[in-house]
Image 1 (cartoon, rainbow over the protein chains, first blue to last red):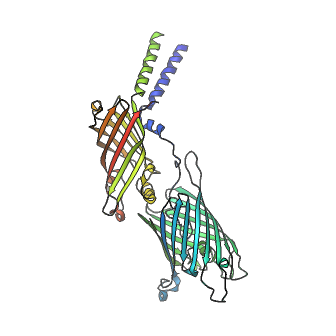
Image 2 (image 1 turned 90 degrees about the horizontal axis):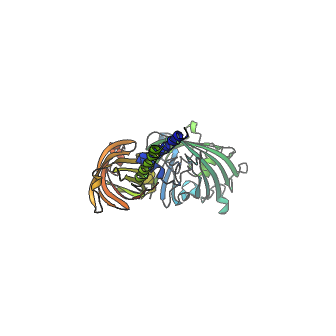
Image 3 (image 1 turned 60 degrees about the vertical axis):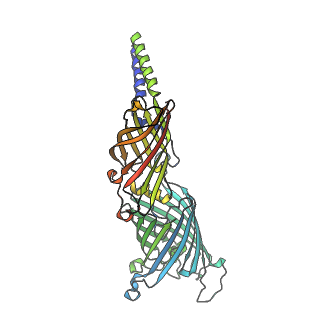
Length: 289
Length: 181
C-alpha cells in the first residue's frame, strides 16, 4: 500500500511539472513585476476638472500651455450678446519637473492677477497586490493681484496683495467611465476689502466626470465654502462642462457661476447665482508640447 | 516494485530532457510604426517575453501594452486609454508553431510562423515570416509584419484619421537563451 501511495505521489508531482505545458503560462510566471503594476491612470482627462485642479499631473518634462476664457453672464441678454461682449482670460504655462511634480505660472486679466502653483502626487490609486483606493495629490498656490484699487484709492504693498491656497486632492476612478474627487481647501488672503470678511476661508470641493465616449466626458464641480465674504454676498461655485479630447489638445467647454479661473477667485469671490442665470460660458484649451 | 521504479525514472528523464529544450527571452524588442499624412508615430517595447520549445517548434509571445514607450507621454496615455484599452486588455499575445523548425541552423534563414495573434481581446490567425538563427546557446528571431487595426476592433475616430494609420508596421527582435526552470 505504501509503495502504491508513493507511486501516485511521484506521478502526481510529475504531472504537476508537466502542467506548465502551455508556453503562455510559463511567460506569465516569468513576467517581471513592475513598479507601475496596478497603478490606475487617467482618472481625469486634464489637469483641471473644470475651474479647479484635478489629481492629474503633467508627465516628466512635458510643457502644457493653457488658455482659459470666461465670458460675461448669460442673463445679460442680447444687448451684451449673452455675455460674449465681456471676457476674462488666463494664460498659463505648466511644466512637469518629474512625473509627480508639476509647476505652473499664470496670469489672469481679472484684477491683473499673477499666480504660481506646485502640485505633487503623493499617492497613486492602485489595484491588485498593493491596492490603494485613492489618488492623493497636494496643491499649493500663491497669487498676486496687481490691479490698483480704484475706490477708495489705497496704496498696497506687494505682500498685502498676496493670497495663498492649499488643497488636498483626493480622487478615485471608480470605473473606466466614472471618477470623482474631494478637495478640502484652505484659502488665506492677506488683505480683505471689508473688515467683516474673513481672511481665511475653508471650503470642500466635489468634482466628478462621466465619460460619454473614449474622447468626450461630462464634468461637474461644486465648491462649498464654510465661511464666506459677507460684503460681496459670496456664492458657492458650481460648474458643468464637457471635455473633448483630440490628440495633443483637450478642450473643455464650461458653464459656471464663477468668472475667475484661479482658486482664490472662484472659491472665495464668486458672486453669481447659478440658478438665477448668472452663468458664465467659457472654455479651457490646453496644448501639450 | 522494479517496473514502478523504472517507470518513475523514465518519467523524470523525460521531464528533464524536455525542460532543457526551451529557449526564453525577457527583453525582446517590439516596435510599431504608424505612417499617416499628419504625423508618424512610433513606440518601443523592450520588455517583451518570448519562448520557443525546441522539441516541438512551438512559440509563444507575451507583450504588456503599458510597456510601450512613446515619444510623448500624452500619446502613450491615449494609446492605453482610448485605443488598446490596456486596463481591460493588458496584454497582446501570440501562440503558434514555427514551420520547418528542424531546418533552422546557425546560418540565418527565413522561416514562417503560423499562429494566433491576440490584440485588444480579438484573436486572428497570422502567418508571419521571420529570420531565424539557431546556435547551441541561442535562438535569434527578427522580422516584421503589418497589423490592420480594424481586424482587432481598434477604432480610429475621423478627427485623427490623418494622424493615425490603419495599417501599422510591427517589427520584432528576440534573442532567446536556454531556459531552465
